[in-house]
Amino acid sequence: MEILLQLLFSGIALGMIYAVIAFGYQLTFATSGTLNFGQGEALMLGALVGLSLVSTIHGGPYLNFWLMIPVVMVFGALQGAVVEWIGVRPAIKAKSEFGWIMSTIALAIIFKNVAENIWGKDDLTFPSPVSATPFHVFGANVQLMQVLVVIGAIAMMLAVELFNRKSIYGKAVVATSNDPDAAGLMGINTGMVITFSYALSSATAAFAGVLVAPLTLTGATMGTSLGLKAFAVAIIGGLTSGMGAVVGGLILGISETLTGFYVSTGYKEVPGLVLLLLVLAIKPAGLFGKAAIKKV
Amino acid sequence: MLSISNLHAAYGKVEVLHGISLEVPKGKVVTLIGSNGAGKTTTMRAISGMIKPVSGTVMLGGKDITGLDSHRISRAGLAHSPEGRRVFSTMSVNDNLMLGAFPRLTGSRPKGDVNADLEKAMELFPRLKERRTQLAGTLSGGEQQMLAMARAVMLNPDVILLDEPSMGLAPILVDEVFRIIRNLKERGVTMLLVEQFAAAALNVADHGYVLENGRIAVSGPAEKLRDDPAVKAAYLGG
Image (cartoon, rainbow over all chains, first blue to last red; front, side, top):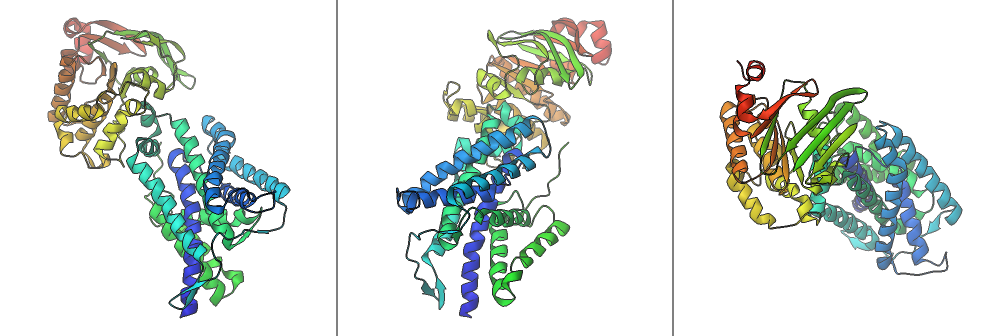
C-alpha cells in the first residue's frame, strides 16, 4: 500500500511537469495555430542556465535558487521570442502550413548542440534548494521538492489563467486566439501577441526546467523526451484545454511510475503512448478538447 | 473625415476594386450599395487594413492610413464592424466591449471615461444589458450584431465602418439595427454603411455611392439616388 502511494506521489510530481510543458504548447497554439517543438529544449536551457547561476560550474554561485527563478524565466522568455522571430514568423507570413514544424525542430537541435558545447554531454547534478531527506505521508516517502513541483506548476498555470481573464492585455491574447482578424480591428497587435505567447510558453518551460532539475539529472539531452511526452499530454488532454493538460499530465505521469514499478521500467512509457493512440483514434480533439473544425 | 481616392484592391492576382473614390464627411452617414460581388466588403476591408490595397490612398482626418496594419488604423480612430459580426465567442459581452476600447485602455488613444461609455453603450443597445456576463458565442444572431456595433462604438472612433449590419436578421431586428444607426447619427457619429437593404440605407444616409463591378457607377445625395430611375430599377425593387 505504501509503495502504491509512493508511486502515485512520484507520478503526480512527474505528471505536473508534463502538464506545465503541455500548457506551454497550448499557449502558442491558441494564438497562432503553431507549436514550438523545441519546448523540451527550452526546458533544458532553463535548467542549465539555472544550474550555472546557482552552482559552481561557471564560477558561481551567483544567486540562490529562489532569486534564480525569475532570471531563468526572463531568459526563457527571450529565448522563446527568438524562436518565434526566426522560426515561426516567416512561416506565418508566407502562409506556410508546415514551415514552422521544421524550423522549430531545427532550432531545437541547434539549442541542444549549443548546450552540449557549453555544459558538456554528461549529465550534471542540480543542487536541491530544499532538504532532499524525504518525509512520510501515510507511510510513503515524499520529497519536499516534489511538493514544490506540484505547487509551482499549479501556481504558474493559475497565474496565466488569471492574467488572461483579468487584465486587458490577457483579454487581448484570448481575443487573438478567438479571431486574429477581428482582434486586429480592435487595435490589438496580433503579431506582438504571438511573440508574447512564444515568450510566455518558453518561460513556462524554463520554469518547469528548474523545478524538475533537482529531482532528475540535468543535461543537454534532458528536454527531448520530456518535450515529446508533454506533446503527447497536450494531444491527450486537448490542445485547447488547460484542464486537459493537467489531467493528461497526471494520467501519463502516474501510468509511467506504476508501469515502471509493477511491469518493467523498459515499458514505463508504453501505457501513456497507447492512450495517445487511442485518443487519436477515438477522440482526436483530446479528452477535454473541443472539436477543432477547420475554418476555410 | 474619411477620404478614399482611386483605391485598387486585389485578392491574389484578381483585381476586385478598380479605382474607388469616395468621401465620408464628418458627422455624415454615407452608404455604399451594390449587388453581391460588387466589391462592397472588399472596399471596407481595404480601408480598415484587413487587406492591403494595391494602390490609391485612404486618408483619415488628414492622416494617410493607406496600407497600415489594421491595429494601427484602429488606433488612428477608425472602427470596423466587420461582415459576419466576428464577435469573440468565448468571451463575455462585457469583455468584448472592453476590447472595443483596447486602444483607449492601453494608451494609444485618449482614454476618456471607458466605464461611462460602457453604460452608454448598454443604454443604446438595451438587448446587451441583460446579457453582459453571457458568452458572446451564446447570443442570437441579432444580439451578436448589436454587440459588434457596440464594440465599434466603444473605440470612440472618428469613423465607424458598418458592413452589412442587417445580414441574416429577422425583419424586426433589421428595424432595430436601423433605429440604432439613426440614433448614432443623431449623436454625430460619422459612418460608412454597406447594406443590402438599399432603400433603408438610403433613408438613413446623407450620401450614397452605387458600386458595380469594382467601380463607382453612380453617386449623389441619398434622396437623389432614391429617385434615380436606374438605381430604383436595379436596387430598390422598381
